[in-house]
Length: 127
Image (tube, rainbow, N blue to C red; front, top):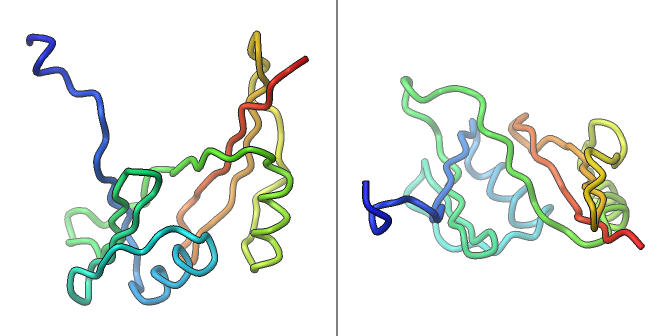
């Protein structure tokens, strides 16, 4: 494979949901993602920082838990508090995953309206 054929950028991520209107409301109203458009009754699309996020009712052969989406934030504690105030359920508190040479990697995991696991992460600069 030549360098011009190497894959490097994700343009869209699909997340399976059971109830599109409920999931649309959660991602738009609770998480604050930019709503793009609906693709009929079984699909809805968002802009997640330049990556298109598709929420859809899965075909039977694709009906399985989704991958974890990691949303990058600055000040993870403030974001956790804001989402909790909107009714988001977190699985534990923000915690350090790794201490890197110039930052500490913090994560906090939560679930969406469909039971999918999502996460916030922060690369907190160290002094």
